[in-house]
Image 1 (tube, rainbow, N blue to C red):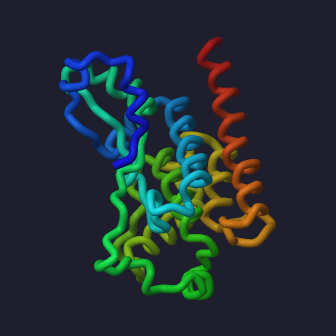
Image 2 (cartoon, rainbow, N blue to C red):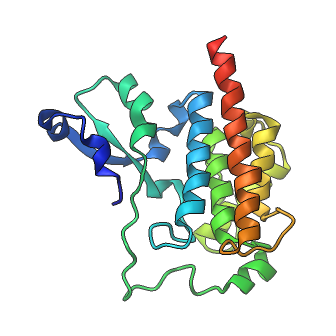
Length: 220
């Protein structure tokens, strides 16, 4: 697990000992307020930019791979409000002896057979949709691996403009669409400067602007 332990430096030893470990942030998302959801979305987009080329963020990542620390000694409301302060990637480095379920399908297979131009960004789109959705995006009846089913089901919800995903508005859903389809008017190589720049401008900055606007609403 990866976390900047220096953030705990201001805590005394007893408070650190009370910590009960980490839980997937997905378990808490449905209890987030709008501003918290947008903040989480922005942090995820930034994490993709920072870690997409490392073992810390596998191509087929999910919200289950993003964790937060919880303290059972605190009130439940405090855990919710502080969860975003302790976000960290909970993936372990891959075992070289165990095959990756996604590695059996080349990027060309994903692109030509399923229209998935960039798996990492498609999974970001799924995660963003899960943040605003009131239902699980996975549809078991669809063909393909669980990772592919998630992406296809997310696209289906998006195309249908299902009421369960409308909580954060059309601007947020446009960001989701761009990620799901890797629709940034450039190539689909996330190692390249063009897509990285587009992802920052059209996703990270858009979410930052949405967060700023919502902060004004809550201040008022």
